[in-house]
Structures are given as C-alpha cells and as structure tokens.
Image (cartoon, rainbow, N blue to C red):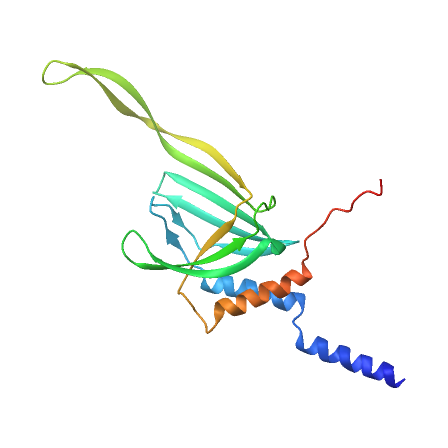
Length: 203
C-alpha cells in the first residue's frame, strides 16, 4: 500500500511539471502567429502573414501572396514533419532597401521526403501579338501590341526534400531567450510525435 502511494505521488509530480501535448502545441502555434508578419520579396511578391496548424504529425504553414493588382495570386503550402526539425535559429540581415529584417529559420533533417513546398498560383495578364511596322528611317521592324482581353494562367510547382524553411519575424528576439525556449518546446513535442518507422516483414 505504501509503495502504491509513493508511485501515485511520483506520477502526480511528473504530470504537474511536464507540459501536455495540447499545451505544447498551443504555445508553439500562439508564438508563431503572434510574431510572424507580412513581407515583400525582392521580386515584388507581397506575402500575407502566414497561418500555422499542426495536422497529425506535421506542422503546416500556408502563405497567400500576390504581385500587382491583376498579375499574380498564389498559395504556398509548406509541410514539415515534427520529427524532421533539427533546430530553429533567428537570422538577421538587410533587405534590398537596407532595412533590417529577421527570419525565423527552421533547419530540417536532410533527405526528409515528407518535407515539401506545394505552390499553386494564377497569373493574370494580356496576350500580346507581334506585327510588322516601318520606323522613321523606313526600315521594317517587329513590334508588339497588347490585346484587350485579360487571360488567366494556372500554374503549380512542387519541391521535395527541402532542408530549411524561413518565416519572417517582427524582431531578432521578441522575448527573452525566445529561440532557446522555442527549441525546447519543439524537442518536447518531438517526444510526443516520434518518427514513424515502417515495420519490417518477418520474412
């Protein structure tokens, strides 16, 4: 009876001081949502603040982006298995305008086939046709003109076995020891989401 009491007391203490799966997931998602931000790339693609969710064994990051009013609209979906995250670092650098920007970098295990980026986008533009003309010197030249009707082109791109993912963040260290604490939370979650190993057949 005494041994049973000690065992129950020990289990109570362990459960009291260890974070549950739901608490750990919520903390990670809340921090990503709180500190991620909109950004524009050097090729003028404007990315909306991403959305994050934990689906099964994976962290899913979704970005919506656009370029111009009627040019490009797309969706980028990044899939990262929890077990594949090696560590997280905060990278500081300057963008093309000279401003400081901060990337929250997920470093991933190499050869992770499940680590992927699926991209779908729609390009809007105008069809152009070539025609022959004569310039002021009397020479024939080829010119192009834009037709009035707008055209839509759907495109997609898939990347497999990616080795890192960047998320734009508000500052280098938004909280004291944030990167250390986030890595600790990921390591704890990995104990709850171990890598799935295919069972070998007996023969």
